[in-house]
Length: 132
Length: 184
Image: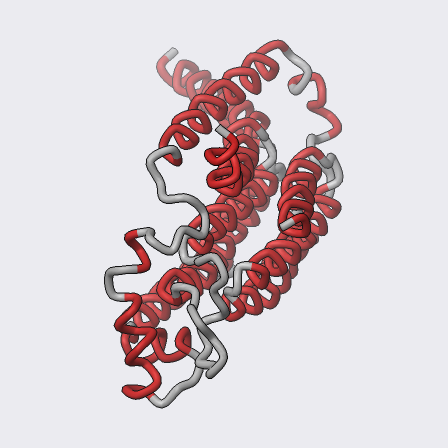
């Protein structure tokens, strides 16, 4: 049991971080909070991936004559790309939020839904007026 | 060993604090702190290239982008005149449901880790596929001391090409979303 905890507790903390981000994405109504949650989720996934490249006693993957064993460089390379891509997704998400704010004057999703509903009812009322 | 645990603890604390703040500027600053702690964790994991990318891109550019977004929108969570809507019962059941969904997902993921190799296990399959070939051959074949650089630029150049495509697409979408409408 102790061995299991020592071997896996890192993974469990990463999962906790992922779930904090996930919770922010689905439970928070504020769109900026959702983006922050997405960022936390992304970095937690990247952390999980990087940790699979760790070897006990390994040194950084840079050639060094005293090194006995190196850490696995492949996860590092892949996650470098992932970090840059995550900035791209964040930038697009922020642009969409700014656009939504211009259109609705709010960044709370419940208020946006309310405004949508009001607009739908208004247009239905107008249509009834025309028919009458 | 102890320092790793403390750093991970701080990560969890700053993540929770970031999503609980009502002031969105505090949220953004806490996210920046979270990214910086993450960079330190990656240095501890010997992923130095990833660490400085995160420190500049994650803690730097993302923070600037988010603050720019706040200056264009609003700083506080919730909005004054429609405050009554938030405290209604619908919202409470919504956050309870999300909490259950998150808990179930987390439990499934924890169950998944039981089949994974232990943290730092040198016999893990990921260390025995192509990794030894790169570690042995990269200096001779590329002449670069840093294996991550050699891999990124020489062996996996197409990844970077794809990354550039993604960044180009993201840039184009941002321009299209935020352009001013021409007066008709």
